Length: 383
Figure 1 (tube, rainbow, N blue to C red):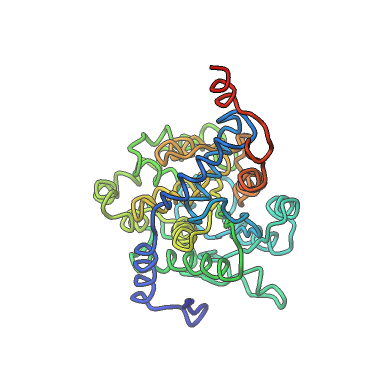
Figure 2: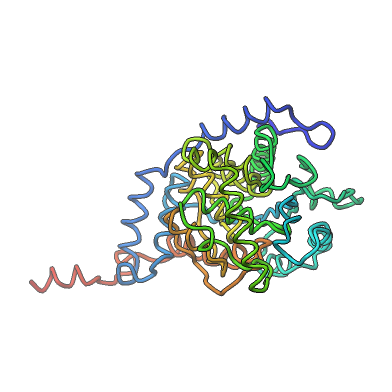
């Protein structure tokens, strides 16, 4: 497997675009035979049919993705926290200073954030990926395996004043996400989880969700870090301005998702989209986190619809745009706890549920093997 060079040896725009195109071409739908076998096996397990609810659907998806029933256990797992800043921050959409992005990246690397605590509980590795933090993040000795330098530029441009990114920058960020997914899969990780960090990134998310679903800005714009009513109204206005400025990109969203990412950003959205594509191409399940990942997944659906087959919605964020995105994607969240932190926290909380779904399909006895009569057998024998 060929990996992208990093840092000062960053790939050319042509190489980045070629990697993205090759990854999209490698994505395939779920294997129909394995999917059928998994569904049939679920119906033979020692329980009423459908009694495990959504977990049955997850196990079938895992089998179809792996092409074998039962599927391999989705472990070990790694959560990639993609970090970047946003030029739209200048429009007053959040009271939090932009410097918090870099400060939180340092916190992730030190192991002090919520995602670190949850990942330790779930047994998942945390990797932090700088794809566009505005402040420099020197790689301290001993952190090379935790903090990855995939910086495309120091934050996006202001989406209300023009395109947030160039198309080449979008391809570079997409390629960075693909590369991280490829590396983690090559290292033996059998489940990938999305994480994010970026002050003002829910504003870009709202613009992306509105673009790909047609929902009004007010319906998909949330309070992010907990803004007051006045700031929320300002945020909605900013999203509406962005949609108007980039009306051509909005109109072409179905055929030019790269153009939409160029219009609105963010770099972490593009990198997460590439990460999902890379996981799908490698036939590794990807657990999506909240609204940032949901917005990125809408981009993925436009680029390679079958890649969504590799995705499991870890949770439903309190951000209203996330529910809209999940409905459009046809995904049902495993956890609903009013979370709105990001970082990958909701995805990590859902990891044991995804693993339990695979374990049930693999380890539970069937009616035949356990010598237990199911209701169909009983009905037949008494007829």
